[in-house]
Length: 328
Image (cartoon, rainbow, N blue to C red; front, side, top):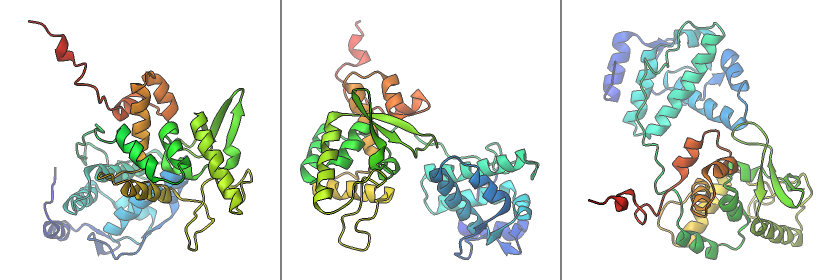
């Protein structure tokens, strides 16, 4: 297995092996975004969600920029070897990319070539893990769940808490919060539910809304109406109230994260708080409160219970520990 330790070694190896694409050596590209056409575009269009398409597209464009290809055609794809992908992986490592980010980019390439093999365009998958090894990553998420004290500090610092209520009680992803429209809030018998038409799975899903969440959503809605904003059923719930060109436009998932970070800083929270931490917090608080792991799995809409349990942080593990039961 080949491991290249530096950019100079990488370039020397490229020239010694003749790893060229379209007569260009595979270095750091020319800074232009490659055009993704043909089978590559077919691969992207076959994904179930727009979020997945964007993620794959960004990773693949990064790779093709690295190998110096501006317009990706089938012949380029057929010319790629595992050595190109190893060189890409090692370059990312030399630039101190996170291991999880490197593994995600390798997974994107592996998925692309898996489709090309199935379609008969290439014979082998050059990104197969037997040829290109990824990095071991610690799958625990310790420290991601916010403590009750931190939650209380953030709650005191914000002027409107509808977003934070949805993140905490709903365990929503930031993209799901950004895509909520007023029409997505509905009743089912005596309960209020939130329809989620755009999710990571690509399938419509729903969650139960607690009375606290409904109260803050109604307060926020009344504030919008008093300020002259529409709350018609097809309108996105969360809009920008900034005093710039974005005012009145729907918030993006990045905006949700910026809002969370802003109020965490305002509250004096030292840790780097992100919107996704509230999803971990929702999981941990629910299990601590007595919910069964399977209930939390359904609420967070995880396919695998193992994912849910990785989100859960047993913060009382020292109070009732297995070693306390050992008697000699």
